[in-house]
Length: 83
Image 1 (tube, rainbow, N blue to C red):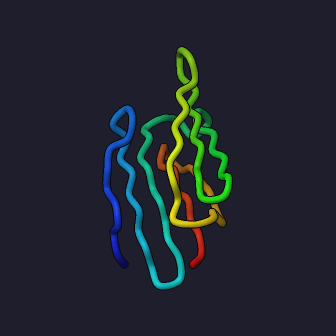
Image 2: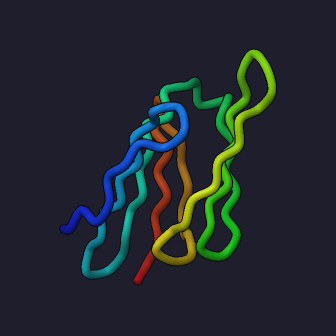
């Protein structure tokens, strides 16, 4: 396993990208309820919308490829893809 990228995005959420021989995983600890997160992937771009008390916050980031699986569990967004 190789960690390729670790960075804070926007409101301090931590984004990590892991690369494996057969695939990759991008994980972000967004720290909100699962129901407040909406994710759409288009090609190699992820679009994340977080609903809060005010206006929704939208963020985009590049993925290492096309997403095969997206999940949100306990405020952690996970996007997985194949090589």
